[in-house]
Length: 128
Image (cartoon, rainbow, N blue to C red; front, side, top):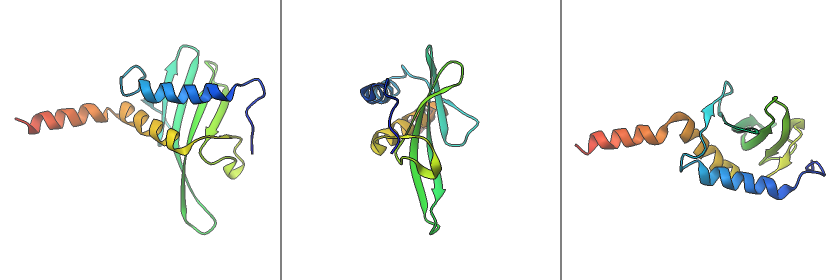
């Protein structure tokens, strides 16, 4: 199992995910689509955070799904990679709670695609 760099306090990642989950629905955090399918990014002053849904097939052909969070410096260097499935396919990642990453992914996707605005518009039209 990959461990966090010794100088990185693991509780900071818990706090980061919690604040992103709390701030996204309030629109304090704005997410954008990335060139990668099923990946969304928020750009902040001291770096950016990307959250993605990943899919792969195991040896038996069954689909596997996991979520990943990547913390990136303003220069584009990956600081840390958290994943709900550690070390899959040799990826250097730190294990993290799948439910929390899945919730963050859903919120980031809704923010980036404007899903709530679309639904509000449709509901407004239907209420007339």
